[in-house]
Length: 204
Ligand code: GDP
Picture 1 (tube, rainbow, N blue to C red):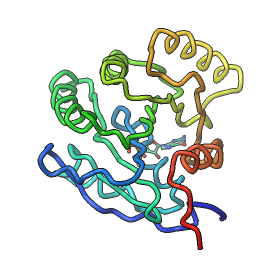
Picture 2: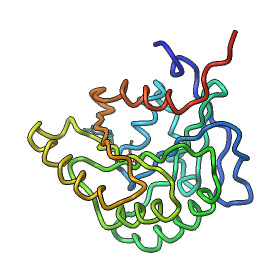
Picture 3: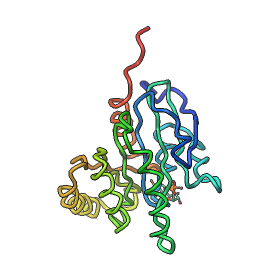
Picture 4: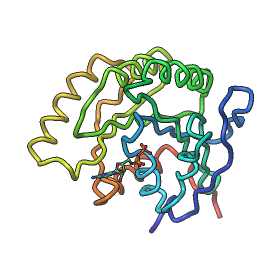
């Protein structure tokens, strides 16, 4: 594998409150989405590792931001999953408090990848997160996950529906990415996006 993702992606820090966030020093890309959206699988697929995002599933660490770094050029920030139906509101509130403190003035945060399960589309809780990102003026891109579960026509209809919604969201990137971590669809394309946003390789 050429490029950035031939290098290892290492866990550098976890933070559950503002005071212990690692200082920003290189570009960051954050991954966000509802619990079970396929976020760990996608981070693992992109970084070509099997267990990288496992740390996020460790009890007690599920509500923190986890920072990973590749080759000193890019950080991947795994944001806590949000929105299990039964505890939705409460979780969103604590999630929002943590990410608000992270988003505040994080100039090196290049983009938030907002993962949406392609089978389910937007839920109310996703809209709340989008409003929050719009308010914080953080650029974000919608990533449809698990597209292997949809027929071609269903995926096209889903993308069309989402395009309509994001037109109303000023900080949303107009292009929607569609991925399957299981089958590999869209992974190379997403790596290319991340590589563009990373620091260039150091001159040898
Ligand atoms: P997280 O909670 O957002 O980190 O989600 P996980 O990565 O743990 O995945 C949640 C569930 O979705 C697991 O059962 C995965 O096997 C499944 N999943 C993840 N990615 C895909 C995918 O690309 N296709 C399909 N069909 N299922 C997936």
